[in-house]
Image (cartoon, rainbow, N blue to C red; front, side, top):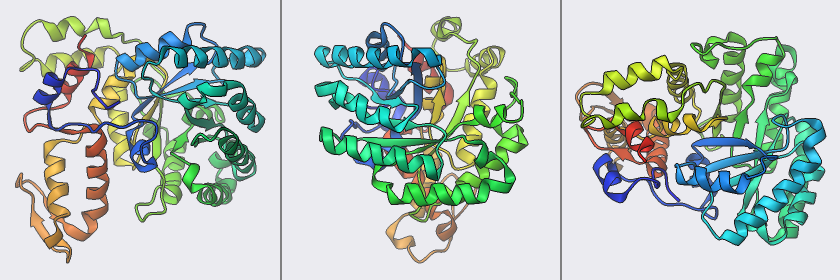
Length: 386
C-alpha cells in the first residue's frame, strides 16, 4: 500500500516531485508509525465490516481501528468480538489488500482471547489500541500483547490511548506521565504510536469544542497536549510518534463538493474550494491538522471517511519544506552554520533545525513531496477523484 495509491500512477506523477513510498504491515516500525495518517475508527459490530474495510482501502485509507470500546454499548461487546472473528475470516478468504488493522479492546484478557480466536486470519492484524492507558493498566495490556505475539508468531503493535482523568488533572499529571514513560520505554519495540483521547479530556470538565474551534483553543486540553509532547515526543531518540486528536464534526459528504472539482481544469478554483470547505465545517479540521503538526503531532484519529483525504493532503511535504530539509542535512553542513533558503524567504540554521529536517524527510518518505506548483487544493482534489 501507499498514500495516494488509490489514484492512478499518471495522476501521482503529475502531483509529486517525490512519490510516497510503498509499505506493508511488515515494514519497519519507524516507517509505519509515520505512515499511519488518518486512522479511521469503525465500530466492531458493523455487520458488513469486511466490505467496509475493503471499500475504505480503495478510497485511500491505510490504517483502521475496529473498536470494541466506547463506540459500542457495553451489552454489545460479546457480539462485537464474534463479529470481528467472522469478518477477519471473510477478509482472509478474499485475499484482498487491507489497511493496517488494529482492534481497540477494553481489557487485557481480550487481547489473548481474540488472537486465539482469530486463528490464521491473525495475519491481517497489526495490533491493538489500548484505552485509558496508565502505568498500572498499561503493564497488564502490554504483557498480554507480548503473550499473544508469542502464541501467534505474529508481530503485534500497541497504540496506547492517553485519555485518563489522572493525566488531565494537574496534581497527578507529572507522576502519571512519568509512569507512562517508564511503561512505554520498557516495551518500546511494541509501541507503534501514542494516541490522544481529547474527547475524554473534555468530558472530565463537561466541555465540547464547537466546529469552529480546535483542540488547541480549549486551554485545559492544549496544556495536556503540550505536556505529553514534552515528555513523550522528544526528538532526541527517546520520543514516540504522537497522533492528533479526533475531529468530531462530519456534516460534509464528499459528493457535496465533488461537482465543483469537475467543472473545469482545477487551476484557479482554489478559493472556491476553500470556501466550500469552510461552509461544510472542515475549516476547523484543516486548522487543527496544521496545529497538530506545529505542536509535534503526526497523523490523526478520524471517525468519518470525509476527514481522511484532508488529513493526507495536508501531510504531504511541500517542495519548499523538502528543499529546506535537504539543504540543512547536507553532509558538508555537519559543522553547523546559517544559510539562506533556496526559496530566499527564510533563514535555515543547521544545528537548531536539524531535528525538524529529519522529521520532514521521514514524512516525505511516506507521504511524498509535492511538485513546486502543487498545493493542498490540488492534492485534495486528486484524493477525492473517482
